[in-house]
Image 1 (tube, helix red, strand yellow):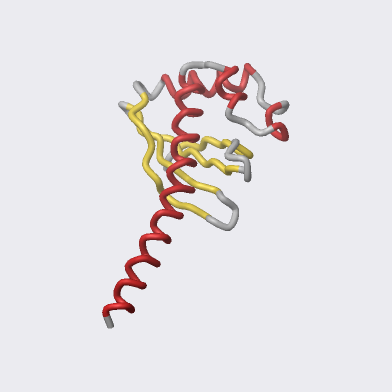
Image 2: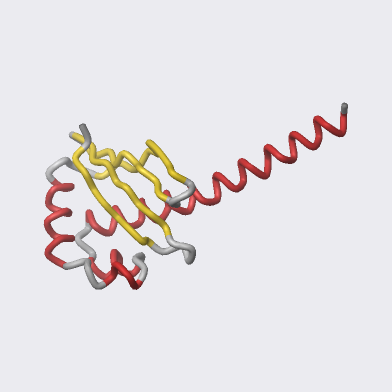
Length: 122
């Protein structure tokens, strides 16, 4: 019985470590990118993106999104709302002084952004 309990604890620890590693790095990437968008820092935004989407990100889009974020006040951080481990996709609520937006990121195998989408929070 003791071996079973210890085995279960080790298995649970490995599962938790795997979850926090993927989700944690995705959240760090999402937060860093959201801060870069908020700051209208194009170079930092594309620095987080994989080559497949890097060319599709424009300075104008970053500026427009930055303006929308600033209209909600100071950026306060992210909270995980949902995740899809199969797609390595994570949805966060980005909180601001006077509102929120949903941020969806997909992370590629190299740890770069394969997708970054922002939607109004309902």
